[in-house]
Length: 296
Image (cartoon, rainbow, N blue to C red; front, side, top):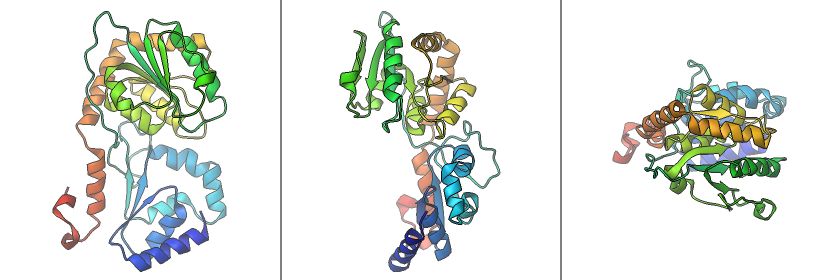
């Protein structure tokens, strides 16, 4: 949100003469420069539209933008396309606001069979951006998992906190691990409600228990949507170990929730959100500029 950024982007567009411009919705000055250039512009929204039009636009960031003369809805509205890389069925944003939902870009795979005698696997992964109180949340969740007949893998996003977290015998703590290798074996994800992690789990058909780490981000909205859809639950960051234990136990025992998450996984895997979004962007190009690969 800077006049300097707007000038620089405008200069780049004049120099490079692109056929289309794609801009992150958070970069309002860049969006304004692109739309003023006359080049077909697509604004990309990478979580629920309800977050951008609500907490983001009306919160501290939106206030700062308005003080600089940038009203988010007006700036976005000047673009030819407003693509939301998320699932319209879960997004609380009502239809008719000029958004085009292209579907999440996360991919998944069906669940792998689990032996009857094998305990269910729970994946715990909170935000890779460290928030105040997150280490304590990890401790309480790990303590809850230690009280249950489950196996658990905890990923900390590379944060150097493994030494401060004591793991019971049924819990493994890893700095980083590829979730796509774990989720086909998992029965539940405990996450912070980040859009990417949540939809990666749902694309694998795995229910999600959301424990938001920050009240002003999209995490509470994502958690509420997951709970309302019957494919997970929402729990306060301040929840006690006992409350977390009971919530995990309830979700693991909920066959209807597991079935709903499996159905959602099938639906999400049937649609290629990245390819759909690329096709919408390619549509901004003239027919003579499209290659066979962009006729999606």
